[in-house]
Length: 83
Image 1 (cartoon, rainbow, N blue to C red):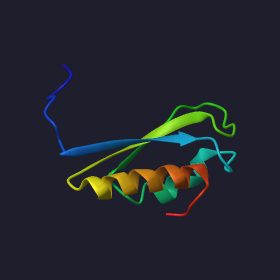
Image 2 (cartoon, rainbow, N blue to C red):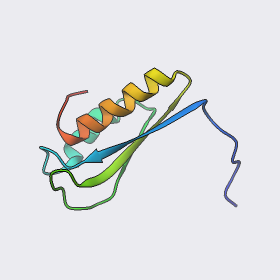
Image 3 (cartoon, rainbow, N blue to C red):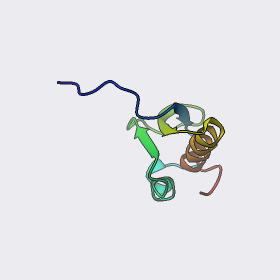
Image 4 (cartoon, rainbow, N blue to C red):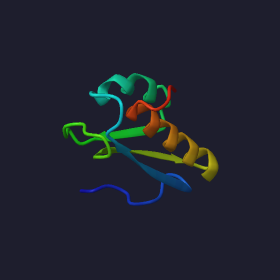
């Protein structure tokens, strides 16, 4: 069984993770996972600049907050920012 398909949050945002300055995306996971609402999905691909190598999903009640958290998580994984 797939489970209950009912929405668990009023807003869900997905942000792509592109290959950036980090050779290994695992280096940013610790910072990203501090936010319990962020769900990273890394595809196991070789990291190359501009290549889509994963995405993060964030759920919540405030759209602007959810968008900001998703964007920040992607940027941290890419090596562009620190959480």
